[in-house]
Every structure is written in C-alpha cells, then in structure tokens.
Length: 101
Image 1 (tube, rainbow, N blue to C red):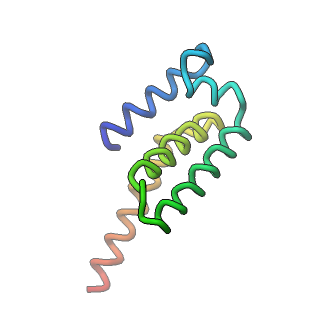
Image 2: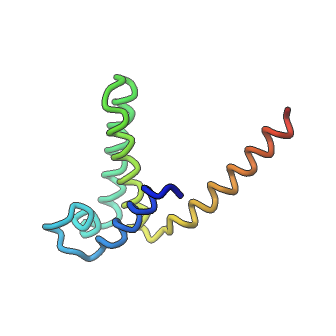
C-alpha cells in the first residue's frame, strides 16, 4: 500500500468516535453507513462530471478515494483485505500478460 494511502487509512480509523464538530470524518461516521454511501455516490458523480469536462479531475479523484475509505471503515470493511485481493489480482493479470506474449 502506498505510504500516503496507509496514513490516510490510519487517520480515518482514528477519527471514529471523535467530536463531530472538530472532524469532518467523525461527522461522516456519526451519520452512519448509508450517509457515507450517499456521499461516495455524490463524489463519484462529481468525478464523472470532471472527466467529461476535463476539469478538476485530480481533486475529484482524491475526494472519491477519501470517501471510499471512509465508507469502507464505516461498513467495517478492512482495507488491508482489499489490498491483499488487489495484489492477487495484479499477480494473476501479470501472469496472463506474460503467458500471452
């Protein structure tokens, strides 16, 4: 996992149960998983619009990543498990590419 993503995941986890007035992440957690899912959908729609208009793409990608990680934590999904699956899938894809040459 990239060091930046790892730090972000740790920071997000540390915000659970904190004062909602001092942390946007804590506020999101306090609203529940459905709220987090809706925010994620909203951010994905904003990314789609950014890509279509070729504007603010990097910013919107960062927002989607952040809200995805918050939603995963809200749902009790361990990011490390997902990272492990991505590594496995990457290995399978690289093997297929190598075998098809």
